[in-house]
Image (cartoon, rainbow, N blue to C red):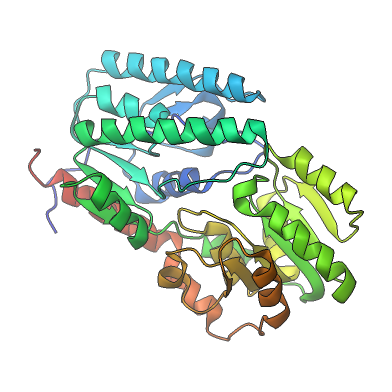
Amino acid sequence: MATTSSPISLLLSLNGSLASEGKSVGGGDLVLFKFIRLAQMHPDLLIPESAQGFVSTDGKKFLTRKNNQLSLLGIISLFLVRIVQGIWHGIRNPTVYDVALAGSPFAVDVIPIWVSKARHKGSVIYHVLPERKAVSFSTWVRFSLAAIEQKITFAILRQACDFIVAGNEFTRRQLKARLPGKPIFTLPAGIDAANFDRVPSPAKDPNLACFIGRLVSQKGIFDLVKCMEALAKSHPDLQLVMVGTGPERDLLVSEIQRLKLTNIRLSGFISETEKIALLKKSTFFFFPSYEEGWGIALAEALYCECRCVCYELAHYRSIFGYFPAYARLGDSQDFLRAIKECKPVSAAQKDFIRQYDDPKVVQQLVAHLETVAGSHPD
């Protein structure tokens, strides 16, 4: 591995972060927040004002507009403002970095990195957006705009970046076709095993299941409602707690009410400790997600020794092996079958997931950045 003789000067763009105090943090944000905390590299950060409390660094913080509770149009406007602010910070900042890294493949992160001054530029990409089926007009607009943005940012990445960090081997193969000639490293997302170990483990409730994630259709929340409708008849004592919120929460509530289901409870956001306690108490974890960059929530549930049921995504078996119960992607009846046939947790499950402990993952990213910084620019 090529290494530099002095510490790497690093700029991280977390300009797309939706993290705010008192709310959950997205998987991509989590990976880099943990990196900043554990790697001791003290990078400079481009970050929204509302997310700066999640990180501590001796480096500079270039702040952009904070998050607001906004409509889809408002969010688009917010991100456009942040892009302009990021460009402005990039132009004014005289520092020439060894590495500048976009925390996501979104324009709000990629464009500021494009205009920054750095010997090497890259982006973290945990998954390539697949084709999506919309459940409402607003969802169709959101999906369409995301697809257009992806085409634009990939065109920028082909010109502006000389390396990529991919979330898994499947995504790496996808990116090799879309970004030919770019060195592509892989990086698991990881879990904070020490934090989980600090929370006491209650007895498992055999009638408790949980789901953790954004309340959006691509997380399979409406498929989950279909399954719980069937389970209300065959397993009437089973209760599902759904943690999180999102733009399709109201549609989910309407569907639950229409079917008069009493076996689903929406908890909204809960603290990290409460989340861990819920996972440790739950016997089941249901995760019918249609797309994941890695699968942090699934890894956490496996570590908490839940019986996990998920749709089989292309990269899951290479990361999680045989430990979750897999169902055919998009087949809610097969998901129901997997729930009913789900076997007791293997004694090896928790130790298997421990390989993705955060300090190990952070070491991998440090090694990738040292390799990049030690190479010659194109």
